[in-house]
Amino acid sequence: MNILIIEDHDALREVTMSALMEMGHKVRGICSAETLNAELEISVPHILILDLNLPGEDGLSLARRLRRLHPTIGIIMVTARNELTDKISGYENGADIYLTKPTSLEELAAAVSALSRRIITWSGDSLQAPFDPEKLKATERARALYEQLVNTRGKLPTMEELATQYGCSIRTLNTEFSTEYGQPVSAFLIEYRFKLAHDAVQQTTIPLKILAEQLGYSHVNHFSTAFRKKFGYAPGYLRKNNGAGP
Image (cartoon, rainbow, N blue to C red; front, top):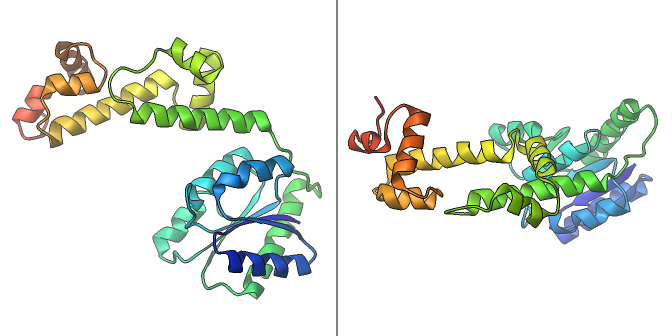
C-alpha cells in the first residue's frame, strides 16, 4: 500500500511511518495540509492516515475535500477527539475507520490491513489511483471563490469580472461552483446574503440603509423590496416586532 500520514506531532509521525514501513508499505509523512497538493502530484495514496487537529485546514475539511476528489481513497482518522458526536462527524466527512488516541501501533496496523483488503476489492486488484490536476484546480478555484463571496461586503464584481479574475468562462465558474456547493454562483449569493440580512435585521440595530449598502444594494428601497419578496414581510416589520415575522 502507498500510505500518506498527515500528523503534526513529529515523533509520533516518525514512529508510525517506521512501523508501517516494516510491514512492507510505502509510507510518506507530512505535518499539515499546506504541503498536501505537492504530495498528491507525486502520487495519490491508497490510504490516508489523518490527524484531525492540524494547523491551518483541519482534518475534517481535508478528509471531506479528498473524499470528493478521490472517492476510492482509504481514510483512517486518528485523533484525541473521542466523543460520539466527533466520531459521527468523522464518518460523515469521509472516514473509513475512526481511531481515538492513544492508539497502539498494533491497532493501527490491523486497521491498515483491514482497509487494504477492502481497497483491493473495490479497485479490482488495481491499486493505481490517478491524480487529476484539472479536477483539483477546479475545486481550489471554487473554494477560493466561496471565500471571496462570503467575506466581501458591499458590491461584488460582476460575473464577467469574476470569470476574468479566475481565468475561466462564466459557465465554467458556475459549473465548478455548483459541483462543490450545490448552486451556481448567483443563486448561492442571493441565498447567503438574504440569510445575512434576515439575521442582521433580527439581531442588530444597524440602520437599514447601512445594512443595504453592506449587502450590495444601491438603495435601501431596493433592499426592502427584495426582502419583502423573499420573506413575505418588510425588514422594518421584522425589526418592529422584535425579530418575529407575521
